[in-house]
Image 1 (tube, rainbow, N blue to C red):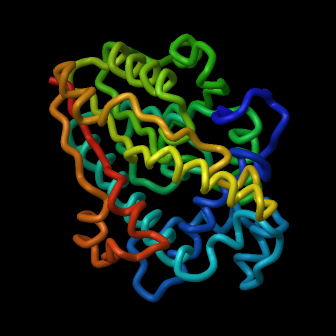
Image 2: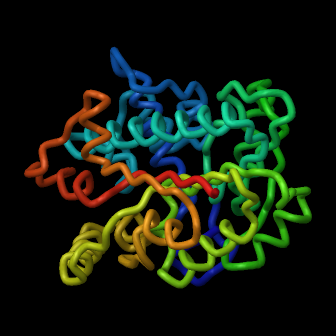
Length: 304
């Protein structure tokens, strides 16, 4: 999808929200270069090299350009890389628990450059649906094909904008609403206005058979004046379209509360708590990353 904007299909993997997928992939790739990484995504660097430009330069130890790659330098970059690694580890464990419980249908919403269909050990019979814009899915498919890699589950692309009728597109791709499903919305909610978050959650709930699971990452909105100042700071630096000018500072309700009110058993884990549990604590008073770690949560829910 292209959240945070009005135009459709005028961007590619290196622009607008497409570039945020590379930003996250680059963080996972940098994590893999650490002496003791929390996770290893062998495809993250491949995507960055395939995209070229500042992303390939970053992988080669050079920082060029004026946007996303530069943000991964310094203290913020170090903390953000830890954040992405911890988030990846958390959601990898979520999928392991889901398949252990017998779930064989997976939906990755706004899949971006998520490589789990290729790198996780899926049981036979698992189907992974990936929802995203056509150009993002095409970039991933072509890059992996050139590498000679095949998915480890049946991977089905669902090329759709989440502002359109994505449940119908999912059904057309063969989704079975009578089978338990493991949903994931990783790094997505900040790019959706509150009304779109509501529609996304409603769709997940309506399409979920008993035994289904949901995993999301969410963050509390910051004070509006602070948010607007961050947006202006980004524009003044000539970096509009990097982060704050792409996101929405809105939330319908905490995910655990929203799903819990509809019969799901929900468990929120504060990001700061999880980072500490995996050996990557971030001081709350750190001006670069402390506020993000303190306001974000990782949430899983199971439908009874």
